[in-house]
Image (cartoon, rainbow, N blue to C red; front, side, top):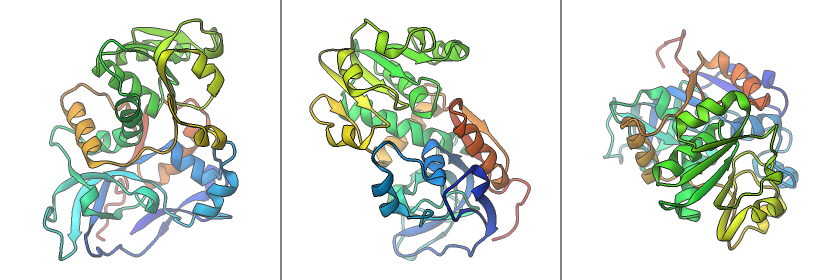
Length: 323
């Protein structure tokens, strides 16, 4: 089968299409034919060896010194079950499933091995592209807004970086939960933010977040350029600060009203997000590229810092070979 390998940290050109053996389903696992896979900011950080401030040494010790140990990146995918282990009873070959692979990665490939217990069935109304696209940003936004900050109707929420994968999901989910949403983005994305549900849009080039005089129940920094002090200053008493891309020191200091750290990959979150997409209540903002060769293009777009929504590739596009 074809995969995208990253042998060494570096530029997008280091993500190279190559051949690899077909995965085999071990106990409790299935092999999925990947119909769509997301290329995310997390993938780009790993490919480049570029991590939030303070995490460099720790991250390389954990995932690889000169290059990632998991050389096939990609965590979020949607596809069809190809094979199942003998002990798997909840899925059968041909079932359409959606999931994330966690630290094992491996989704930038024609086939991926995944634990059956982590997968959910794909709603028929949701195309594979949108199913794969919504997971990364959607699970992050849902975890922080619902599980950590406990957003409720009537809350005021500021989302900094409202047009990216995490930020666009945060705007929509906050609005879905009944909050009044202020979106911080570029002027060119103002109309998009309003369409997603923002009640107010701030152009960061004209009004930096640090200069805002408003106060909010929840401040959600989706891009990592709001300092802890500035974020806390923007809160009402008892408010919550979400640092989705936090430095090591801010992650260590995250307690009380400050939330940081990785978002867990939960099946119940996948199911909720997919149902919202199926019902037209959540737009994944999916940009579909082509086959595995376009992973490099996706990485280049992410590196510009101007990506909108989610990028998805189709591993079998133009190369629909048998396994």
